Image (cartoon, rainbow, N blue to C red; front, top):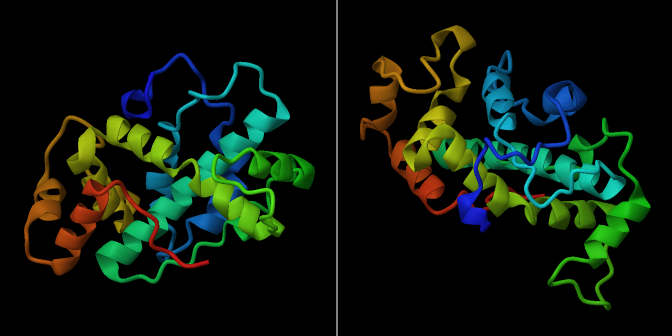
Amino acid sequence: MSDGELMPESDDKYPLDWESVEAAALLAFDIWVGQPELAWAKKAFSFLPGQGLSRNNDSFNEHVAIFRFLVLAGIYHDFCDAAWDETSWITYAEWCEPFEVLDRFVVGQLFAWLADWGSAEAAGFSHAIDRLVEAERDIVVNALRNGFGGIAGLYASLWRSRLESGEVGPDEGGENASDYECFEADDVGKVKAYDWVSEGCPRLGEL
Protein backbone atom coordinates (compact mmCIF):
# COMPACT_ATOMS: atom_id res chain seq x y z
CA MET A 1 0.00 0.00 0.00
CA SER A 2 1.43 3.39 -0.96
CA ASP A 3 1.52 6.38 1.39
CA GLY A 4 -1.18 8.04 -0.69
CA GLU A 5 -3.57 5.20 0.16
CA LEU A 6 -3.16 5.33 3.93
CA MET A 7 -6.52 4.93 5.61
CA PRO A 8 -7.24 5.75 9.26
CA GLU A 9 -9.41 2.66 9.64
CA SER A 10 -6.51 0.35 8.78
CA ASP A 11 -6.08 -2.84 10.79
CA ASP A 12 -2.53 -1.68 11.55
CA LYS A 13 -3.17 -0.09 14.93
CA TYR A 14 -1.25 2.96 16.03
CA PRO A 15 0.89 1.84 19.01
CA LEU A 16 0.12 4.75 21.37
CA ASP A 17 -3.05 6.08 22.98
CA TRP A 18 -3.92 9.69 23.82
CA GLU A 19 -3.16 9.26 27.52
CA SER A 20 0.43 8.33 26.68
CA VAL A 21 1.01 11.53 24.66
CA GLU A 22 -1.15 13.98 26.62
CA ALA A 23 1.70 15.49 28.66
CA ALA A 24 3.67 16.16 25.46
CA ALA A 25 0.54 17.53 23.78
CA LEU A 26 0.20 20.14 26.53
CA LEU A 27 3.71 21.35 25.62
CA ALA A 28 3.46 21.11 21.86
CA PHE A 29 -0.05 22.48 21.33
CA ASP A 30 0.29 25.68 23.33
CA ILE A 31 -0.38 28.60 21.01
CA TRP A 32 -3.82 29.99 21.91
CA VAL A 33 -5.10 31.08 25.31
CA GLY A 34 -6.88 28.16 26.95
CA GLN A 35 -5.36 25.74 24.39
CA PRO A 36 -8.54 25.12 22.34
CA GLU A 37 -6.26 23.53 19.73
CA LEU A 38 -5.96 20.47 21.96
CA ALA A 39 -9.42 19.40 20.77
CA TRP A 40 -8.12 19.37 17.19
CA ALA A 41 -4.96 17.57 18.28
CA LYS A 42 -6.92 14.79 19.96
CA LYS A 43 -9.14 14.32 16.91
CA ALA A 44 -6.17 14.36 14.53
CA PHE A 45 -4.29 11.94 16.78
CA SER A 46 -7.04 9.36 16.23
CA PHE A 47 -6.11 9.31 12.52
CA LEU A 48 -2.39 8.63 12.97
CA PRO A 49 -1.51 5.51 10.96
CA GLY A 50 0.08 2.30 12.12
CA GLN A 51 1.22 1.34 8.61
CA GLY A 52 4.93 0.69 8.48
CA LEU A 53 4.99 -0.34 12.13
CA SER A 54 4.95 -4.02 12.92
CA ARG A 55 2.27 -5.45 15.19
CA ASN A 56 4.94 -6.07 17.81
CA ASN A 57 5.28 -2.86 19.80
CA ASP A 58 9.06 -2.93 20.08
CA SER A 59 11.28 0.04 20.92
CA PHE A 60 11.83 1.06 17.29
CA ASN A 61 8.11 1.10 16.54
CA GLU A 62 7.38 3.06 19.70
CA HIS A 63 9.94 5.69 18.74
CA VAL A 64 8.50 6.08 15.23
CA ALA A 65 5.00 6.36 16.71
CA ILE A 66 6.26 9.20 18.91
CA PHE A 67 7.79 10.90 15.86
CA ARG A 68 4.42 10.75 14.08
CA PHE A 69 2.74 12.43 17.03
CA LEU A 70 5.43 15.11 17.17
CA VAL A 71 5.15 15.96 13.48
CA LEU A 72 1.41 16.38 14.05
CA ALA A 73 2.32 19.27 16.35
CA GLY A 74 4.78 20.59 13.77
CA ILE A 75 2.05 20.56 11.13
CA TYR A 76 -0.25 22.52 13.43
CA HIS A 77 2.40 25.16 14.19
CA ASP A 78 3.12 25.52 10.48
CA PHE A 79 -0.58 26.01 9.72
CA CYS A 80 -0.75 28.79 12.31
CA ASP A 81 2.22 30.40 10.58
CA ALA A 82 0.53 30.18 7.16
CA ALA A 83 -2.94 31.22 8.34
CA TRP A 84 -2.32 33.81 11.04
CA ASP A 85 1.39 34.72 10.78
CA GLU A 86 1.86 33.08 14.15
CA THR A 87 5.61 32.44 13.91
CA SER A 88 6.21 28.71 14.04
CA TRP A 89 8.88 27.74 16.56
CA ILE A 90 9.16 23.99 16.21
CA THR A 91 11.12 22.45 19.07
CA TYR A 92 10.74 18.70 18.71
CA ALA A 93 13.56 17.93 21.14
CA GLU A 94 11.75 19.87 23.89
CA TRP A 95 8.31 18.51 23.04
CA CYS A 96 9.58 14.94 23.32
CA GLU A 97 10.90 15.38 26.89
CA PRO A 98 7.79 13.84 28.54
CA PHE A 99 8.47 10.63 26.59
CA GLU A 100 10.80 8.95 29.04
CA VAL A 101 11.01 5.90 26.76
CA LEU A 102 13.03 7.78 24.13
CA ASP A 103 16.46 6.21 23.99
CA ARG A 104 19.39 8.12 22.46
CA PHE A 105 20.93 4.88 21.20
CA VAL A 106 17.73 3.93 19.36
CA VAL A 107 17.45 7.47 17.99
CA GLY A 108 21.01 7.19 16.69
CA GLN A 109 20.27 3.87 14.99
CA LEU A 110 17.09 5.18 13.37
CA PHE A 111 18.94 8.30 12.23
CA ALA A 112 21.63 6.18 10.58
CA TRP A 113 18.92 4.27 8.70
CA LEU A 114 17.52 7.39 7.01
CA ALA A 115 17.74 7.03 3.24
CA ASP A 116 19.65 10.32 2.80
CA TRP A 117 21.99 9.82 5.74
CA GLY A 118 25.71 10.00 5.00
CA SER A 119 28.28 8.25 7.13
CA ALA A 120 30.20 11.51 7.41
CA GLU A 121 27.17 13.34 8.77
CA ALA A 122 27.59 14.20 12.42
CA ALA A 123 24.49 15.28 14.29
CA GLY A 124 23.46 16.04 17.82
CA PHE A 125 20.34 14.68 19.44
CA SER A 126 18.17 17.69 18.57
CA HIS A 127 19.12 17.57 14.88
CA ALA A 128 18.57 13.81 14.70
CA ILE A 129 15.12 14.15 16.30
CA ASP A 130 14.20 16.90 13.86
CA ARG A 131 15.21 14.81 10.85
CA LEU A 132 13.47 11.67 12.12
CA VAL A 133 10.24 13.48 12.97
CA GLU A 134 10.12 15.29 9.63
CA ALA A 135 10.69 11.98 7.83
CA GLU A 136 7.16 11.03 8.97
CA ARG A 137 5.44 14.22 7.75
CA ASP A 138 4.17 12.95 4.39
CA ILE A 139 2.70 9.80 5.94
CA VAL A 140 0.91 11.80 8.62
CA VAL A 141 -0.37 14.43 6.17
CA ASN A 142 -1.87 11.73 3.94
CA ALA A 143 -3.56 10.14 6.94
CA LEU A 144 -4.96 13.50 8.06
CA ARG A 145 -6.36 14.22 4.60
CA ASN A 146 -8.11 10.86 4.59
CA GLY A 147 -9.32 11.24 8.16
CA PHE A 148 -10.73 14.75 7.82
CA GLY A 149 -12.22 14.19 4.36
CA GLY A 150 -9.67 15.55 1.90
CA ILE A 151 -7.79 18.80 1.52
CA ALA A 152 -10.84 20.99 2.19
CA GLY A 153 -11.82 19.01 5.28
CA LEU A 154 -8.32 19.15 6.76
CA TYR A 155 -8.04 22.87 6.06
CA ALA A 156 -11.45 23.60 7.62
CA SER A 157 -10.63 21.58 10.74
CA LEU A 158 -7.39 23.51 11.19
CA TRP A 159 -8.99 26.90 10.58
CA ARG A 160 -11.66 26.24 13.21
CA SER A 161 -9.18 24.85 15.72
CA ARG A 162 -8.55 28.06 17.63
CA LEU A 163 -12.23 28.47 18.46
CA GLU A 164 -13.38 27.50 21.89
CA SER A 165 -14.42 23.85 21.86
CA GLY A 166 -18.07 24.73 22.35
CA GLU A 167 -18.08 26.85 19.20
CA VAL A 168 -16.69 24.19 16.86
CA GLY A 169 -19.32 22.57 14.64
CA PRO A 170 -19.69 18.90 13.68
CA ASP A 171 -16.43 17.16 12.82
CA GLU A 172 -17.86 15.14 9.98
CA GLY A 173 -20.88 15.11 7.71
CA GLY A 174 -22.42 18.40 8.82
CA GLU A 175 -22.49 22.02 7.72
CA ASN A 176 -22.85 25.13 9.82
CA ALA A 177 -21.90 28.80 9.82
CA SER A 178 -18.29 28.08 10.77
CA ASP A 179 -17.92 25.74 7.76
CA TYR A 180 -18.94 28.52 5.37
CA GLU A 181 -16.83 31.10 7.17
CA CYS A 182 -13.73 28.97 6.62
CA PHE A 183 -14.04 29.32 2.85
CA GLU A 184 -15.12 32.96 2.50
CA ALA A 185 -12.27 34.66 0.64
CA ASP A 186 -12.21 37.63 3.00
CA ASP A 187 -8.82 36.97 4.52
CA VAL A 188 -5.45 36.62 2.81
CA GLY A 189 -4.52 34.10 5.49
CA LYS A 190 -7.29 31.74 4.34
CA VAL A 191 -5.94 31.63 0.80
CA LYS A 192 -2.36 31.17 1.99
CA ALA A 193 -3.36 28.47 4.47
CA TYR A 194 -5.49 26.57 1.97
CA ASP A 195 -2.67 26.64 -0.58
CA TRP A 196 -0.27 25.36 2.09
CA VAL A 197 -2.57 22.41 2.86
CA SER A 198 -2.99 21.76 -0.88
CA GLU A 199 0.80 21.65 -1.27
CA GLY A 200 1.07 18.88 1.32
CA CYS A 201 1.64 20.90 4.52
CA PRO A 202 5.39 21.51 3.94
CA ARG A 203 7.71 22.50 6.75
CA LEU A 204 7.70 26.24 7.48
CA GLY A 205 8.78 26.56 11.08
CA GLU A 206 12.28 27.31 12.22
CA LEU A 207 14.17 25.32 14.84
